[in-house]
Amino acid sequence: MKENRKALLGFIGLVIIGLMLVFLSPNTAVFRGEVKTHKRTKLLLDTYVTIKVRASKNKAKIATDAAFSRMAQIEDRLNRYDEKSEISKINRSAPKPVALSEDTFKAVKLSLKYAKVTDSNFDVTIGPLVLLFDYNKKVVPSKGKIREAKKLVDWRNVVLNEERKTVALNKKGMILDLGGMAKGFAADEAYKVLVKKGIKEGLIDTGSSTYTFNLKKESGLFKVGLKHPRKDKILTVFKVRNKRLSTSGDYQRYFVKSGKRYHHIINPRTGYPAKGLMSVTIISDKSAAETDILSTAIFSMGPDEGIKLARKLKGVEGLLIDSDGAVKSTSKISGLPSRIRLKQ
Image (cartoon, rainbow, N blue to C red; front, side, top):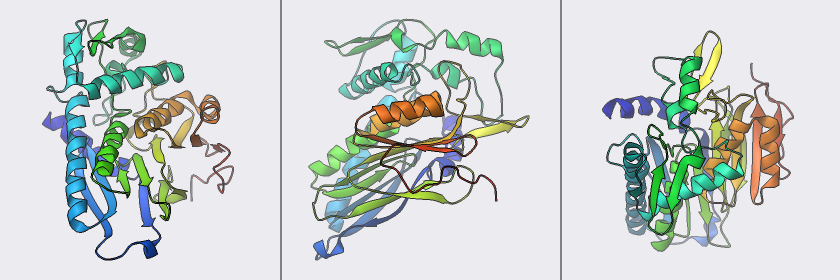
């Protein structure tokens, strides 16, 4: 477990700027007295999680303590690298059903819903394929190993029992992996805690996923910057209010071998890293978990199929940058050229 943690920590510096908070710009005339912006950061979900809120110092501490605690609880339940987690128990117990907490059952159920919506481009049973790629040792698995692993990847073999709140995997050797939505799911739960504690404005940033909320009509917008997929700079800035954002990119975790880039977003249908895109950013009115799922799935789909889905879904805006730097976006995203420069 320590080795997994160490490897994932090496990945944090890249993921944390997938969506970078530039600054918070509220209508400061509204705030008086001791109410200020308070920022706290903790290591959770194998990344640095930042929560920023507008409140008094004492209220901010109480609320963020509770929010971080809730996120840690979600991590304990959904982390497949933790042998004590409910997800690990499901994986070990196949094909027997496992009784779950409401959190884990809800997360698995949501993942299965979007597996269907995305035509299997998001598949929560992708674990066997993920395990094949070693990003530290730069190991590319053989075609035979990928072919065998794919036999265990099919979300239709996950059985839910609504009444008993159980989940079972039909085949032994299947591996549930909620990595594509766990950060967003945790952010959703943290938001609920913050609001319950009386916080009206804030931001929850898990690196690749950001949850913004402004419950006051007088409040201003959050500015969230998108990292350039090939340069150390911000590509564009989104001004948002009460939105969820998620970015998936081939620059977040990868290795290059024989001149070819192998990144961490595996296409469940091919068994290999998804082709055709460098970056996908989704801005939505949906939950952070759903937004996370969509950025992953659309990246897997590729530019043409992906932009079609983004344009089809209500409350969803998307910005896609393909492997050649060509930009595709939905109607409400503007201001970018049709192609970005990849080299100086």
